[in-house]
Figure (spheres, rainbow, N blue to C red):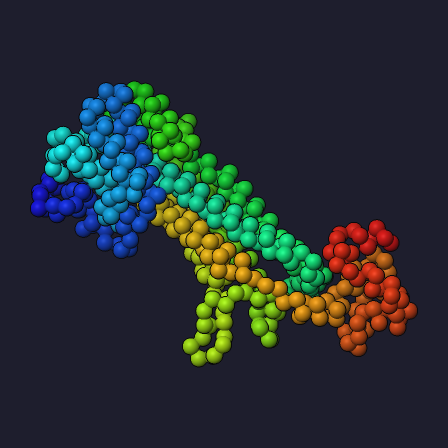
Length: 467
């Protein structure tokens, strides 16, 4: 065991712990969720990039010595490579605007740096968590900068998952291209379309969200690094912002830039609200798509059953042979969570006061969950559902042949009133509309059949042009 001291008193630290007294107090103070910062690997990596960039800038500006900077950089590289993440033991929800997480990072990096120098943990006279690892920084610029970089990483992962899901829908759209079906509005039969068009629309909805998310990612690139406590840059050397920001961009691969007003950037969390709003939009649309997949596959005997989803597991402990749409259902639930997270982020942002927002830990955790869970859910929907969907060819063909919705396509040729009379008679008699049209003397059965083909029924303006 080793003992460490802060201005409150002395704490005993386990010998294998890379964290120290400040982290120990945070563990005691915030036993809230049972989730630790170690479960946010993007944030741990982001902190390592922030601290490494700071070490480079501090060395260049003469704040720390070369041996200290090199050891700190090596320790940060270990974190970037995925090592020692388990040492981030503070709860994700904490008071202090992220101070506990920043202290945790400072202590882990300092003690790992000491190991690289061949010294025991706790030799803070050589590498100190605050004086050296945290030099020229405050929690109030290091923490939000790390959160933004972590969010940027998470956005890239989500973009990849969305692109793969879109590709799966595009492949199904091509496969289902010639298959006619009944389009529906307000859950009622409406007009003909192809199953390919329906799935192409799903792909287009996702592509639109990809564009919005890609554009919004750059909101995470404006940082307040160098603003220190409230944005005035107190305790940072002259020129520090101009050195640390490009270095951070170089090391992390994130195109960060210094905010125009560091005081505003330190207190303003509007960018997080914005990106959360985009995630809410994505969640709303993915949930709608999942609702449609569940409806379209409902049955298999007494439902819509236009399509068949792949069977993933038994659907009931009492009803033999029942299979449920479990993959769209899990996507729905993730989307509900993301929408709830957006409310939490909005409230946390609104609650900020004066020169700092104290509630950024909640923002960071909620953003992490939204990004990570949406990415995982998209992958699950793609692999375990969309790629295995099959069309119910026979049933769709039977419905099209008997459907009165086909008369809508005749409006440009015969007018609404005659089309309505055909529909009414077809419903009353159960006869195909071609037979009814001929019986009513409106159009011969042969002429009707020539018009009612997929290419004409699903292309806007074709019949009108023929009229």
